[in-house]
Structures are given as structure tokens and as C-alpha cells.
Amino acid sequence: MKRATPYLLLLPALIFTVFVLAYPLIQNLFNSFYQVSLVRGTGGWIGLENYEKVFRDSEFWLAFRNTAVYAVAGTVLALVVGLAFALLLNLKLGRITTVFNVIYTIPWVISPVVAGFTWKWLLNDNFGIINHWLISLGLIHEEITWLGNPDTALLCVAIARLWQFYPFAMVMFLAGLQAIPEEQYEAAAVDGASMFQKFYNITLPNLQSVSAVLLLLGILWSFNDFNMVFVMTRGGPMNASMVLPVLVREYSFVFFDLGKGSALSVIIFALLVSLSFLYLKALSRREPA
Amino acid sequence: MKRAAPILLMAVIAAFVLLPILWTLSTSLKPLSEVNVHPPRWTSPQMSIQPYIDMFFFLPFATYTANSLIVATSATILTLVIGSLAAFAFARFQFAGKDLFLLVFLLSQMLPGASVIVPLFQLLTEVGLYDTLLGLTLTHAAVLLPFAIWLLYGFFCGIPREVEEAALIDGCSRLAALRKVLLPLALPGLGATALFAFLGSWNEFFFALILTSSDTTRTVPVGIGLFVGEYTDIWNQMSAAAILFSVPPLMVFLAMRKTFVKGLVAGAIK
Image 1: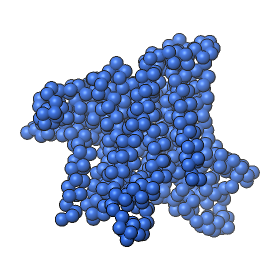
Image 2: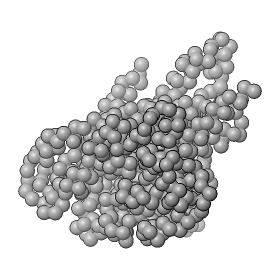
Image 3: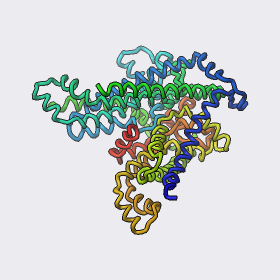
Image 4: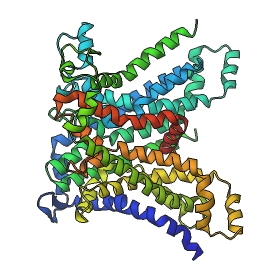
């Protein structure tokens, strides 16, 4: 009886996890081999036809490319900005730094929906402040419909996402910076190292493991990010900013093809698992050196 | 003044970081006639809190807010109760498969919403919970559980075993020891976990969007996210809703910044 106690304690949590996460993950796989329509219900087994439909869809390839760019470029940029801000905050300029630290973290605290909303309004072609400023500065001559233009839509969403995500990198880098022993810098100063040399030879190597974690998490999270794109553009105009999670919703709940939506979900899951796997493998290979 | 230059730089950056929020705040205080002006202006002579009142009447934001409160509160309670039991098992028992279970919870936290949404939608439809507050609450609780378990596990491990052992010697059962000794000591940790869970559910958009379909069940993020393209002529009310909705997260963040940052970092790494 006593041996059963921990399992009984775990049971409710396991039930939740199984019903809402594990079962759907497996069911998804089954769905993807059947004809499943939101309006007509489940039909017969159709083998790989759902996957074929996805791979033959040019929208999928566009979304795939967009997602890759959005996730990789966006994360790298967020890391650069986060590191720059963390270095500024680490200058130890007294209490005022805490105020800036709080302000710089705020974008991360508010809801992604609100973040998307504020940027959408900021970029509004007629009444937004961005166009007004750019025109006042003489950088552009007429209003740009930032989110309605296929050339700029994805870029704008990525900037909004950068705004919301960099604080995470900043907070992590700041913790990393504060963990570097002061003695290393003092020793370097004695040896007459320049500021750049100190940064390159002490700061960066010490931040390597933090950066590795941030890179993986950032790419995984951005790969899964539905909110920013949906709120700002819904993937438009003409799919110019379409990403994979938004496409899952479109297949399943706009075109009612749950089978095709499930197939795409399985593809996304496989992509993420292999991405994490490759990454962890690359990391462990580098470690012994 | 070696300090002046970096401080000035930091202040300029701060202004840019706050720009989207300040612009929305300014919009939320202007009458519509002042919002739709060209070129846009930051202030207007007729600024008032009227849009904050109008939004509750023009769009069903009163219902949305009530729904958000109900779902977030119930999901938090569920998460906390179920999560504490599981975390207690991990922190105080040795059992076969412990590492495996921990790993399952860790991994399920990384699971993309897009990979489970279709079957989840089918399941909830099947059992009659699609488009209900209960269905959304259960989903949110499940999504928040792994993170809560990890947080609580950390808090429980920080409490010395001896306190409970003393209670056991005095004749308490294990569960009574959890309730009477461990939980009171873990109260700060439980509080922090409750706030994270609440905010997690409060801000959640993806599941809330797809698992509800009527005005009586939608939450505030769905209201904002869904109508942002459609009611483009009431930017001031939408801005007011966005600002009002951001108040709870901001308050929590400002009140307990250190715990907040630590918790979110811990939630990501572990």
C-alpha cells in the first residue's frame, strides 16, 4: 500500500497530461492517415495522401521558408540585442540601472496578443506614428502599408517578435555576465588587455553555454509562435507572412480539412524533434574538446 | 562625467522600448475624432477615460473579462492542487520510474500547441466541452501543469525533511504532513506558482482562440486578437482594452520582479 502512494499522488497530473498532451499527439498521427473533415466527419484510410497534399501545396513551402527565416534570423537578432542591452545594464552605473532593467523587461511581461496589437497600431498606414515619423524625417515620401505589403509584412512581424523576445535573452545574459568572476578581468587588466580583448577572450567564452540554451529555446519557441503572426497579419497579404502554426489552423479550421491539418502538425513535430536532436548532438560532440 | 553618456543612451533605448505601449496608451485616452487624424498626434485637448467605459458596451468586453477571470482562477486552483500532489511525490518519495516521469513532464512542456490542437478539438467536441469555459479551463490546467510541477518541486526540495519527520513521529500521516506542515512552509512558493499559472492562463491565446467560438465563452485575448482586424474604426476602445488587460501582468511583474525573473528563467532551463 505504501509503495503505491507516490503513484497515487502523481495520478491526477498524469491523467491531465495524457488526455490533453499525450493522447492528442498519438491521435494526430492516426488522423493524418485518414480522410477527416470538420463538416463531414471521419472517412476512410487514405495512406499518405494527406502528406502528399501538404507537400504539393506551394503555401506549405512558402510557410516553411517564412518560419525558418522568422525563427532563425529572429532568434539570432534577439540574442544580439539581448546581449547588447545586458552589457549596458552590467556597467554598474548605480540604482538607475534597475529602472532601465525593469523598463527593458516589460515587453516580455505583457500578453503576446497585446504586443501584436500595439505594433499593428503603431504601423498603421494612415494614423500610425511610424509612417508619420519616417515622412517627417524625409526617409519616405508617402505612407507605406507595412502589414499590407508582401515585401514588408513578415519583416514587421519579426520586428514585433524581436521586441517581445529580446528581454528573455537579456535577462539570461545578464545573469551569465554577473556570474563571471571579477578576478578574470583583473588578471587581464594586469596583463594590459584592451576592452575588446577582454570581451572577446573572457566575456564571450563565459557566455557560451547560456547562448547555446538561448539559441535552441529561441528557435523552438519562434518556430511554434502562432500569436504574433496571427494577430498582426493572419499570414497575409497573399500568404507573404504565413508561418506553419498559422497554416495548421488554416487547413483545419478555415478549410475544414482536419486530416491535412494533422499531417502538417506531424511534420512540424518531426521537424522540431530532429532539430533539437541535431542540436544536442552537435553540442555533445563539441564538449570534450 | 563618464556616466552621462551610457545613461543617456540607455534612456533613449528605454523610450524606444516603451514606444508601442505609450502610443497605445495615448490612443486609449483620445476620442475617436482625435484618433483618426492625419498626421497623428500624441496628445489631444479632449483626452478622457471615456474609451475605457465605452469598450464594455460596444464590444462584449465585460463578458470576456469575466470569462478570463473565471478560466484563469479555476485553472490556477486546479494546477496548484494537482501540481502540489505530484511535486510532493517527486520531492519526498523514491519510486521506480521517477526520473522517467520527471522527463515526461519536462518534455510535455516543450510540446507545440499546433501538434495537439486538432485531436484536442475533436476530443472536446466529442465530450461536449468544445466552446465551454470548463473545456478551456481543463486545457489550460493541463498546459500549465508541467511548469507548475517543476516550480513546486524546486520549492518543496528547499524545505528540510526534518520538519515533516517530526510531524510523522507525532503520528501524522504522510498526507496530513503535507497539508499541515509542508504546505504552510511552502506558502511563498505556492503563491509564486499561483501567480505564474494565473498569468499563463490570462495571457493564453492559441487554445482559447481555437477551442471557443461564441461571445459567451471568449476570453479577453481572443476578443483583442480576433477583432483587431475587424473593428479598425474603434482603435481607441481596442487600445483601452489592451491597456486594461495588461495591468494584472504588469502589477505582478513590478511587485515581485526578482521571483518573476527567476521563475521564468527556471521555467525555460531546468
